[in-house]
Length: 291
Length: 266
Image 1: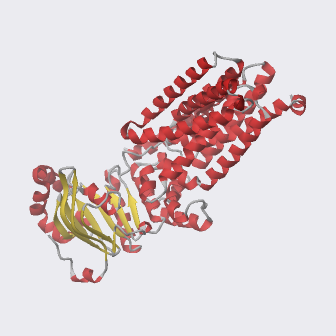
Image 2 (image 1 turned 120 degrees about the vertical axis):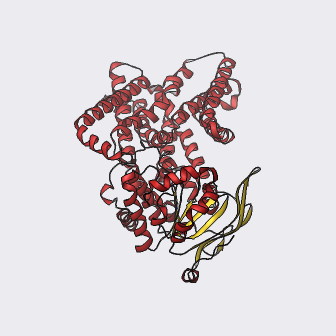
Image 3 (image 1 turned 45 degrees about the vertical axis):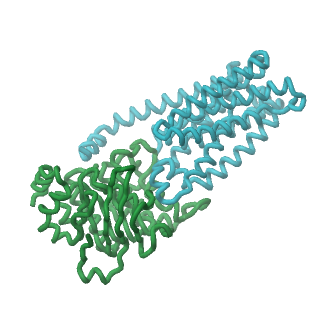
């Protein structure tokens, strides 16, 4: 493996990209999960697929698009979809989750049309659906590196605001936080990270990297910063562990990464159960206080 | 209907001044010709049954709803021009709407009250942390600072939300039904904490509640609201006037009121 890493550029690309995605996907995921927007990642990933299909179609029919990395078109669609979701959430104020199936089915519908226009599936598209380590190019790596830097810097700068918007949106607005612009920046970041992550885990599994590590982390973390820390830790373990395992066992990397994340989640649930059983008496006291 | 406040208090400046305020949702008049002034340093309770317009009044004062008719002055400034919102702390009715599984510590929640003051793109510094700890201390929650907010009881959570409002050192603190979700046996201690904030820290307090049982012994002034303002004045006067004015304000709810009255143990 080490030998391979030193010798093969595609392995280097895959691992470096994996490390970056293992940070940014769970990092944004924490804010998505606590705001109960877990399904947004799914909706946007399907819109991204439409962008990729469009790019592959254009590549075939318009010479100017030959050689253009489909990830760019995927990002354009993803960001567009994100803005559309925001708009829909305003239109359907009391049915905000409705925006997600609308965008999701819209994305799948568009993808299917583009795919059929391009005369059906090819291996290229398949690698976008389920992720493919060998498909990660140097350009992909640099694009993802740029996105990662932007995301990490923005989250650091807007941490307070994002926290308060997630915890208590009404209060945040009442205290004069620029909720709309911050939410806009956030959703654009989510769209970019989704487009960036799909190379490794694939469109169908992108949302798992944003939600599963967070779901595990919430079970055991104390406080918000610790939740972020554990989410990224679990994300990294899943991505790196998954890549190594898939390399040796010749498994699909996307699926292996996701299954590792699921295992970690199950593990944290068990740990929590054990801890609760241990602290039963303390909990009992607290409950008594409450009633 | 303008009620005169005692001479000594007229000397002090009023923090909120409301004149001829009327507010409608479509055709429903929710507030009608409200005149109310709150003097600096007072502890005012606005009481009234459900649907009496209490929340609407709060939202108007907080600038969350736009004025339709009448005037509101905050710290002597017209509310439409008022920018200094940090001088007003607000604690909304949390008990039912709050996501108890949110992974945040007591400290993190209280510190989030400084978000606006610290400003965008800046991070929390040592001096801010000291303020947060002082606020937690003032509400008696300092020892819980690293607990997750969801592990606390309703009354403790409410104290943390008050600390969050206190960190930006407001001169006026507005509380919406603060005792909902506070256990009956802890309500007295809760009011005592508010009283200390009022007396020791000099924070003007305004709270809204539908529980009039024993409110008048806890606060300095009472305003009784049901679309119109039926009584506003000293809480001792309120005791005497209570039955008569309350019946006007509460109307049908008279039965309920007397029940509360006895329940309040007076």
